[in-house]
Image: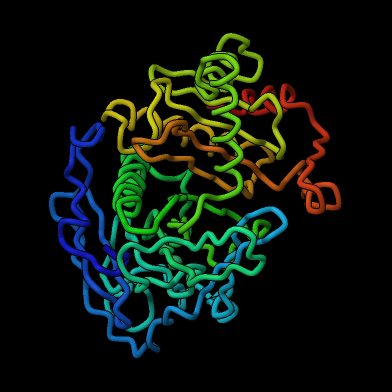
Length: 388
Ligand SMILES: [Zn+2]
């Protein structure tokens, strides 16, 4: 099945207790935007917001040649090339916000009176070759220094709230839980598609991070390759297992819990800590205590708990310097049959003090070797102090 070949089954989330899924997931109402992109409305309300009709006169979607991936022959990583993204909406005035609900269906991406959580295909995607066909696989071609392929995959936008001035940290626990369920449903749907190797749910928050739309939202990338960080982590996990016989991520979590030095919070089902070798300012990792591969495997209680801890960390972030902290929230999830991998979130900021930003300079950008000017233990102490 190609990413564009959507059937009602493919967006049905009600697969509890099958394939390791730990709870009922919401089933979205789905419709299409004017250029045929899919939009999904998620809600827990008894009378959920009703999707309207998109009346805009939009140009046709980019074809398969619009995005490409090329393999960097020096290190084997894939690079996405998406020239059309130059045209994407850049800091529009509030009345032009494409993520606010628009009942007229003429000025925004979301034709509706209101919504709870909505997901739609990105109009300016980094990966847009949705029609590459079933059985898509990236070419391997050992020895070939110039390997290029269509940018197969899918990029989605997730609006966390219809409130333009809102933020994830301002969501109620129930709404945050709905977002967790939406991430779960989207991850399972996208991972099931041909040619998708990895699904990445993330949020960039703050203009300092390069956010071009201030409306609270995140993104999901379904990549046709395994990303560098995932590849490196899974290789480390495999080496660790061969050397010690134990699971790397379980060992990390157990080590942090027993030391306690960098723990921010431990609840019935979840722990948050500053990692031992944190690379970024205010870096925090959040793990469920039970080893699962992806969000959909969590039970209801575990998902509620994870959402609450996630909110606690985000609220501590905003309390750290008395104003919204720019951050990146990055979810790590794996297929049920992945040999290694442990669901967790990695959050970090580019703000290293109240008035200074962290720039990725020579050592970081040129060598991927990070320098940090505050010990992870001090970062943990500061965050614990402002944690509600
Ligand atoms: Zn808005």
